Length: 456
Image 1 (cartoon, rainbow, N blue to C red):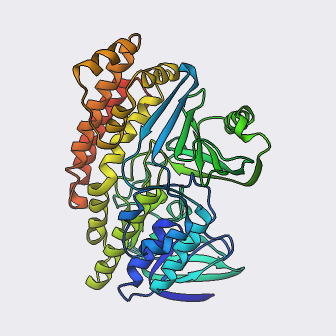
Image 2 (image 1 turned 180 degrees about the vertical axis):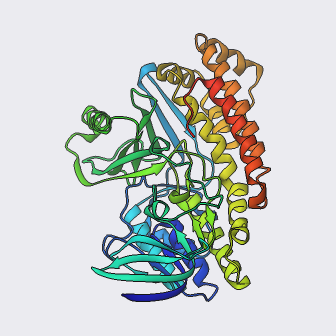
Image 3 (image 1 turned 120 degrees about the horizontal axis):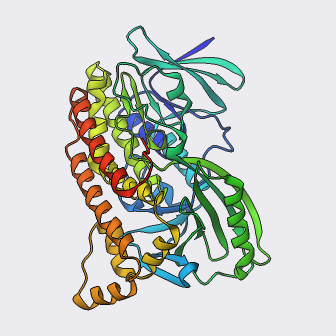
């Protein structure tokens, strides 16, 4: 069996994997990305294609390397269709926003990582994780182009996506690595790339539409005025074909899609859960979808994955330099993720919990009654304020939804408390058990308030 030796082995050529590997290679270490797809298919994944905040991405892969994949930089707001209320909400989106060609973006990511000195081994399927007698991860076993191969490394970075095989194979006993993971915490996504005969009127908007169940929503994101990413996200607990039919029926009902041609179809799984409590074990770090680094309310995961890759890469470099790849010495990666976006994502997940227990018609009715600009403040700034006149108008329009409003207010208070608790995320694994007990006590109150079933 062939053996390859590297400082770091990265599983998966996605956003997190490429940013992690490029960060490491830029520091002069030897790093390889093993990717199960061949060189032509690498980077081709199911995605909504919306990208927010690319101007602030890590520099390991320069932004100008990614720009060829930006197909529509004119989008500036969300368009929320609420047919139950015969209402369309136009909500501005602050910051830089674009729709991309995800396959081209994937190619550019890989090229950027290659520029940094990363090796790529395509058509390589991982089938096991190597661990020594102490439990430290020391590499992986794989099959490359049909031949068995072993990769030895000081650190393995798992960017292998949702429900990663590596986490099934590794023994995390005696570590803090989060193993509280199950299918109900994930959703399935399906999307089609559709060419329409005439330009759509909403080519400056990201279009969202609720399905008739709170567990799913439709999207229409314009790559260009005539090239639309039409997709659907739904919890894995739902019946997939029934919800995919919801998308197909909506496409049939939209006059702008008459005579349209479907060019590409693809599906995937993604986390709609809080980030992993801990994504490190001796010699091992998980990044991106493999660690729950996705906004659980929107499914947006590119930005979180990019920064998780940066933080993991930097911590791997330090740990190898120290000659210490213990859980303790990799822990700073966890704290940086929680400080940057992990706590906020955990707070947003509280609203996912609420959505499983609230009546979808009540939810849509409430949203339709609120001013769009104030919804934008709440979505992107975490708080909102209204003049007395706006409050009065909203109160009148939302009459009949006050029970739902009260439930939302109570849930928001708990979400804020949870975010505050994540501000106190432990600085070492030794303090993790006590922090987790306190967090779980807050979540017990979330379930009690919302009436939702426990998610974790």
